[in-house]
Length: 309
Image (cartoon, rainbow, N blue to C red; front, top):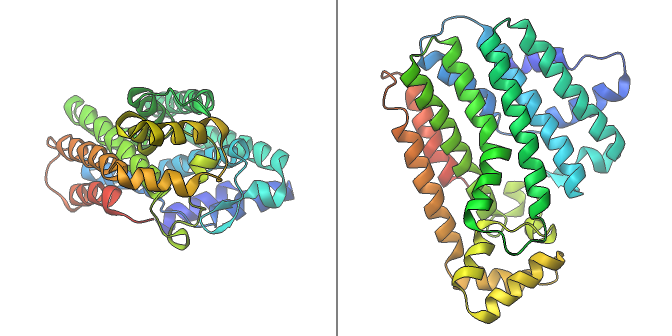
């Protein structure tokens, strides 16, 4: 991971000072580096012995960082990982344009690997992530979003980059067709579980641990699984309260919505979905031979569900 960070820092070089400032600010702002770790683990789990996996891990992190810059502008977020967002500090225009710089730098780096399949996986992933962003935008303030619509956004917007990361490791390691399919499924299910827990933490976490304000999703009018559960399983009064909160946004009804979520067991239901996805991720690795790298991938499935940040 230190080598990956070195590649990332080198890739951020630009003669334009503002690009360096914004990019370094968000890259240095913490984060789990989970997506690049997936590239490293899967490549080694498939027997890869070279160094190109570090470059592709950096590419994946740059793509992720670009999506964060754009997300925070769209969501008008002011806090991420306990720090001011880049848009709050540098403005929306700088955040969008530096996000574009990170995307194009990622494409420059992936071309340098000189592998058409690598380029195809990443290009397809970025396209689907963009579709997911627009789908989520269409769902904002829409209280009629169902579970499948919600999961589709997760799979496009979040899980697709996890899936790309695990596919890249398999490609580099010369994985069999069966192993590649398993790695893709692992990444998709792991990413889905990860986002499900993110949505749980928006109503249950310690703000200091997550580095974001509780209730951000509600304030933005996002119909996540805990809210969908209340509308489907709660009393008419609880459902009406949540529906109004989604349609109008804001934190005014947060206390009442939180009480409805707790009363209907909505968070445990969302965790149940996440545990099922994590188990599917574990099952998908069956064709990989035993190794410490496979063990790490299995542990990440547990972490995705058990984490509190």
